[in-house]
Length: 269
Image (cartoon, rainbow, N blue to C red; front, top):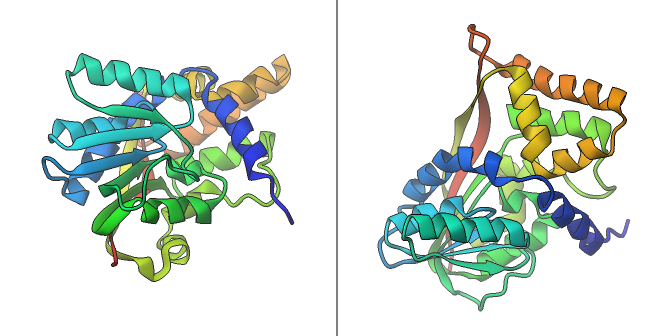
C-alpha cells in the first residue's frame, strides 16, 4: 500500500495548529529536564530538539549553556517557544522544519533529542534516518516517547475509536518500545539506556483532564469540533474515563502515572 505521508503531515500540522498545545506541553517540562540530564548535555555542545513544539528540550539544554536549536513544522508552537526562551533570557534558535526532512547539514549536532515529538512523524524510518544523519559520530540521541500500554497510549486508542488513523501509518507509541527503536536504527546507534519512566498527570478531576485536552491539545480539539453535541458529550466522558482508569488519587483530583520510554544512545561511527 502506498501511503501519502505528505498529505498526512498536512493534516497533522493543521491539528497541531488548532487549540493551544503549549497549555498541555508546558506541563511536560520535567520529561525534557530528565532527558537532557540522561543525555548528559555539556555546556557549549550543539543540541537539536526535533519536533520541539514549544521548546521544552531546547530550553532545558539552553539552561545548561548548550547551543540549543529547536525545529518544528507548526509555526504557532515555534512562536511560543521563542516567547518562552526570551522570558528566561535564553539564546535558543527556533527554525521551521519537518522531522522527516531536517533543514540541517549532515553531522551538525553533538546531541539530538526529542520529547514526545518525533514519535508523531508518520514515516518512522525516514524520521529515524534524519536523527542519525544530523548527529555527529559519537554524538548522542535521546528520546522520550509514550509507550503503548501507558495512560497516553490508552488515550490515543480512545481517540482512534472516534477518528481512525490513516491506513498504513504505524502507531506513534511504537517509538516507546525498545524493539521498534532497534528496528528503526539498527546498528547505527548503540543504546546505552532504555528506561521506562512515569510522567504523572495532575488535574483537578477526570472531567478537568478531559476538558483541558479537548480545549488545548490540537488534534483532540480539532476532532471535538467535528462532533455533534451528543457525540461530544460521549467523547468527553471517554477521555475522562481514561483518567479514571489510571488515577491513584482518592480525593477527587487526578494523579495518574503515564509510562514513557526514555532512550539514550550513541551514534556509531
